[in-house]
Length: 298
Image 1 (cartoon, rainbow, N blue to C red):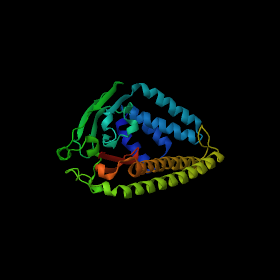
Image 2 (cartoon, helix red, strand yellow; image 1 turned 45 degrees about the vertical axis):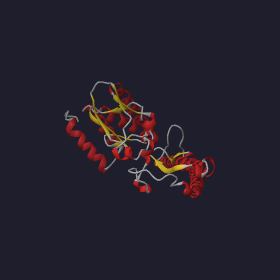
Image 3 (cartoon, rainbow, N blue to C red; image 1 turned 90 degrees about the vertical axis):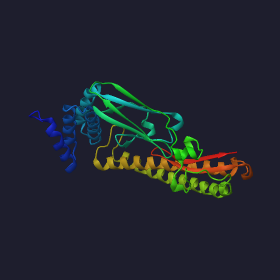
Image 4 (cartoon, rainbow, N blue to C red; image 1 turned 30 degrees about the vertical axis):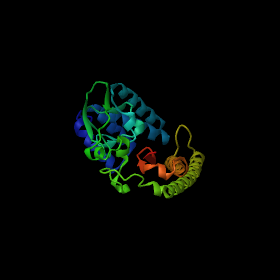
């Protein structure tokens, strides 16, 4: 780096960080990325160094990294990925091979200059891909993923796009052929009871995890953690465990509520089986949500 050979230095900093991670090496790697024009990577690393240093009580290092991040921010190019509302839950969106969570869609995400691939796919839908060239100027690029058409097999089954995207051979039902009318109606009570059981179990697990998260957070606060960070590595680990347990508590509670809702619909809200056709209950799990989809004609 002192010789001005940043392109040679960056791979060595990366290797050093893999072998013996440290925020000093991470800071140097961020500076190296900035020198070679990978400003988005530099920005993310400077912010990470600042947060880690602040949690360890290294205020000067945290302030220096935060200042470097602010100096890089005006140079950032960003990419916004948007999807059609009616297919949002059915799509898996990827950017350069990494899944883009639903909460991240529609937000301007910093990217390094170069070519970036945006891909969208879903079960029963025709895949879609687009390559975006991000230049060095600070521009916001937008990619709008259109409504994907049904694949030939799903179209032949006569299913709507949302239902076809939720079909999965693992459920025992194929999207390639429609089911006989009323095929699932006799199973509705058993499915409803099962869904209620899943709901009660999910809420129970969520409650236990929430209590565990609260206990860990209280321990972290007793060890000195506050809004400004944590003074020691041990207290920081307690704070991380509390956050992790809280996240899992939220997921478990969401699954529990979805199970209770699905059970109520199956047992009490739907019409009698002799007036129902092709009731279809399928799991719908993504990185950001979990639940059950109920399809049918009544």
